[in-house]
Length: 124
Image 1 (cartoon, rainbow, N blue to C red):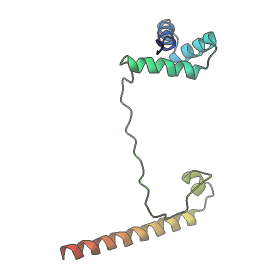
Image 2: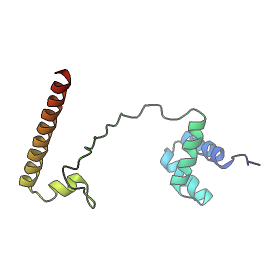
Image 3: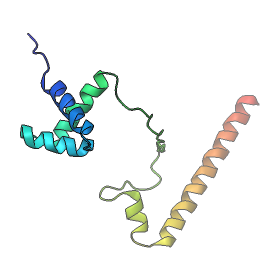
């Protein structure tokens, strides 16, 4: 038989009391964590879980994020230890970056030309 959740609602209520007394949520989470012997992040997770369940989640929608599309053909070797920005610009090798741009541009031109040829053959 499932137990009734009590910790989350208790944390939610206590945090709202502390915020009402003038503390920030971060300060309230830290204080509740000390009182309960748990980490502030755990307290915050419980608080926001209850808030979402009560329909008190985000008041502002998140900003839309965009994802870069990756080509199915690898134009450059995969980076394993550093992000692309760190790996490319950290070295200061502008010539290498320019060469990569040139190679990718040529690859794009070839793909567009091939696509145009296929379209012309279909329309034909």
